[in-house]
Length: 482
Image (cartoon, rainbow, N blue to C red; front, side, top):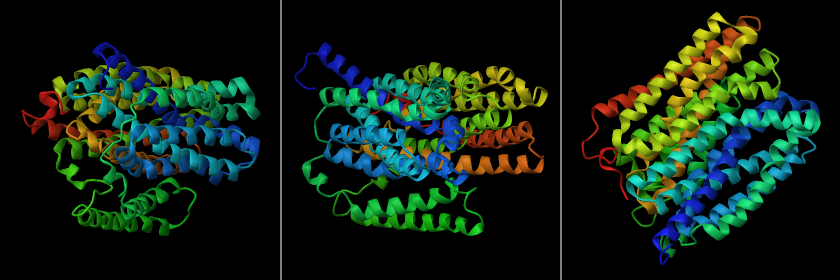
């Protein structure tokens, strides 16, 4: 945006940010909006439990698979091009999912839709790093954090509303069709408003490290597959994929260390020497292990256990989304004043809110659950807004702009792995308790929430340790890096 007067440049930056936030909202919304539509999909096209699992987890799998390569590609070839291509594919695959006539068709559409979302998301964070510098990144990252919180929390509510509007046969299709008009408008605006400049020098674009892409992709798939399919794949052999995945990722590390001697690697492992980046990755992985599981299990508990409608289930999780939206924007603005202690405060608040939900359900189990959990869920949401945005801001604060896309992709990949691990582990506790108690839904949900709280508490310990040993001149204290 060189050559523009300051006022015009500021307006163009805000417009570009708005386009990126809309795209982020769409792609992250599709992580949670489908959960409430599963019963309708089951009845409409005859999907069995394994199909339904793939409709949900297939999106998350391919989403996580593409994040780092897409970030690297955007760094090398220009983020606008990758953003527009990814959003175009996302729009097309959303339409394909909406007209699906069989479970297989819908699963394939969801796999491709997740891959398209993986192309888009690293570009949004990369653009923020490119357009804003130092402490001024607080506001856009705050808005991005609010977008993440709202999209995750409002997904069940919006999905429930669309199902109420369209009925059991058409409503679930509207869940996918709603992306099409928004996607078309956003593509047109993105091509006009996003900066067109290339990422790195052209030589970098010719060396995109295909071996590194393959090794990282195989490693991530091996880690995620047994987690997202742990209820469908019977027997213990599936867990052998996890050590196999770790070995492949170890091979990826070795390859990247060798490759960087001669060319630009897929991901610069030297970023992990940055304290803010490595700690932020760990906290993000742990927090998303609990954060995403809350919505998955609560909507399941309300719909399958208490027989609430999709819309009622969506309304019940709204307090969390509302609280998160309020503090996420604030957290992005004040993070450079308080540093990692702000993240620790947010994590402690989330833990307090979740304990409040457990206590409330102990005394008022059953149909009164949405009413008695509203206040503690609001408290947990207020804490969540002080975790996701500030942690993201601190994590990327020292990352060079030329590596912003791949660094953001690795952060989001860690969050996806954390989410899959949390849903698998906490879900295992949930369904085991459910079977042991003879469909004791409230007890199963309380036990699962205890496990979820455990993820949050471990992340809190990491944040506290980092806060105690934080350097006085770190970006969190000094206002960030350019």
